Amino acid sequence: MKTAQILRRLSIALLIPSTLIGFTWPFFATSQMLANQAEWFFLLSTTISIFLIVSLVATDDLGSKNVAFLGILSALVAALRPLGIGAIGIEPMWFALILAARVMGPTFGFLLGALSMSLSALLTGGIGPWLGYQVFAAAIIGFGVGVIPKRAQGKWELALLAFYGAIAAEVFGILMDLQFWPWSLGSGTELSYQVGAPIAENLSRFFSYHFISALAWDIPRAIMTVSLILVAGRPVLNALRRARHKAAFVTHIEFEELANVRLNHR
Image 1 (tube, helix red, strand yellow):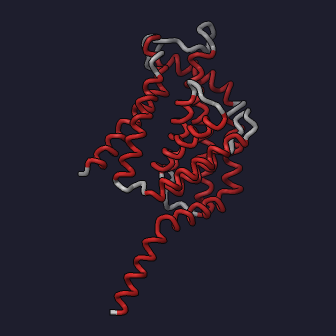
Image 2: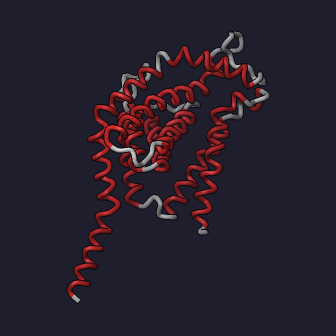
Image 3: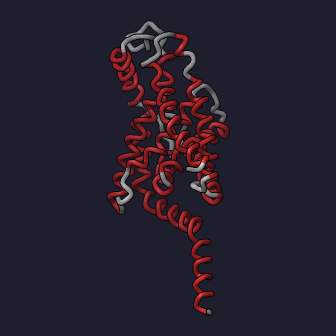
């Protein structure tokens, strides 16, 4: 097995647990010291993501054309985010991320989510301790599109993508609340995070807190995402598939046709 392939598999094997720990640490931290070190998991995940990109390029799984396509789509998704009103979860970027990940694949979706959210933060000045959570939450949503069967087509495909969009809106809200909840309420309320408390107790506190915020953010985000997928999903999917086809296969077909012409003249 080539070194780049080993690096890719190792990157994926390390990336998933480090990202999950970065989000779920409140339920496992047994001391305040461990709670204060949570950001190191996202630093580790960022480093592993860089190795993943390098390994994908090295094994030609992410060729030069796909790298260029990734850059274009990242800029597009990042530009869509500020088009929302900046409140109550209305963010049109998610439908573009989900559709692009559907066409290009889950690994591409992971990278697209991470890069577009990072670029969006630079464009809007939204850089802070929450950025690592936003970046990897978007990456998880892009990667998760891979659960939709490839054989799904037509209205069935749009229905599944819309359903996934609604779930993704809720997942993003949960992941972002996980970074806000431990610090937002102090320690004197019934919903406050308690360091070292049993997992079941903190889970109960968290979901009670999340339900309150979900009404204002996750539901509007889900409605926006589902509506855009149902209304614009088909033409966007067709456009992305045409672009992918041209980028990936035109040159190959031209060379194949040229070879056939030469064989016919012999």
